[in-house]
Amino acid sequence: MFYEIEAISHVRVPPVHFKLNTKKAVLQSLNERFVQFTSKDLGVVIGVSEILDISDGILIPGDGAAYYKTTFKLLAFKPELQEVIQGDITQIADFGAFINLGPIDGMIHISQTMDDFVSFNKAGTLVGKETKRVLKVGEKCNARIIAVSYKDMNSPKIGLTMRQPWMGALAWIEDDLKKQKETPKEKEKKK
Image (cartoon, rainbow, N blue to C red; front, side, top):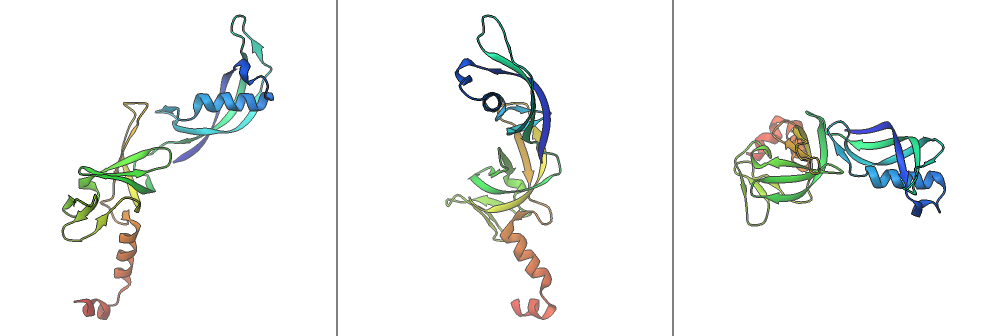
């Protein structure tokens, strides 16, 4: 889920940014400090969206930089358990697939890609044995978040599943919807 979070911090503006107006210098320093910052409470910070207030700056002897108490808004992505997301498959491996969630990727273990026996083939795709469904790079998919780990703050791990109704490649979902709308006569013709 994407959030806009109001925060307050003392911002260090180095002398090289003194040529900018105060608001631009503070914004640049905030983005340098917070973009891609990751924490269990905030998730992954995408950027600073707005500066609400900047106090008068102070200089600390021996430092040379100016410090401003600043109130600002951050945009952050914090994955929530059971949240349904939509993204593109970025990589397929013999153990599963990676899906782009925006600022980070999530992983779908091969056993969670579809309700079928799944195998990895030489073409770099995952194929269902009975359904013949194929999952490939670039495919747009719906998935549900089933695990979130911040053990390594530089690389949070997101576990996903597509083994639930209305999850998986959007093409699969469209096929399922068409099958539901078929009349008994149409179903009989296909046999």
